[in-house]
Image 1: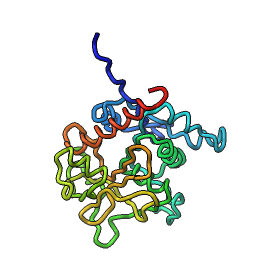
Image 2 (image 1 turned 180 degrees about the vertical axis):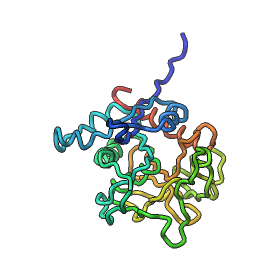
Image 3 (image 1 turned 45 degrees about the vertical axis):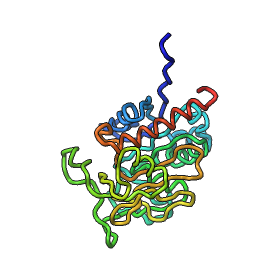
Length: 270
């Protein structure tokens, strides 16, 4: 008989609520879904940003427990929008700042619930910021205006390879989970080159989170949650872009996928 194949895990991918041509849509970028399918060897499932709608229908009873119980992992995506500053006691946003309140009211409690549930969680860019805010941290709203910080925002180009191209180095904290992933990819943890497409960043690190990497100008670029019972990492860059072409990105998504398979195998339905 042929060997039994391990089932591909099911990974929830957070969506954004967008208005397009007069319609209302819940979207997630193709690169995230492809990275889950290729890099993590898993099935991606887009999760609608339904926090507002769920609260209006049944206040306080968005059923995250049931949702998370049917998933093997959670990918918290990046987005052009920013977390509304009232969630972390920040000053009001400047005019023209992109926000997604439906996403905020979905992902902030969802991330907390996922960590409490022990669900393997990988948070990217906005997702890292949501992870920090969800656990009580704050954000810099205009990183490029801080003394000594470079402009980490997306390069002004229509060429995606330029937008997601290498920008600066990071140093990975020795002994942590990200250092182990870097080592598995054959990377020098003291000098890894990443892309950069963010205007906001972590200001005050939330209690319970630890720094896993910093940029060469001192910006927090990755965090973990040592107290979590499952895989819990957040990164400020975009490893999902052409994941198969970058050894560090491949190793990160492979580690995430492995954690999701372990979680699925350990669950009652696994």
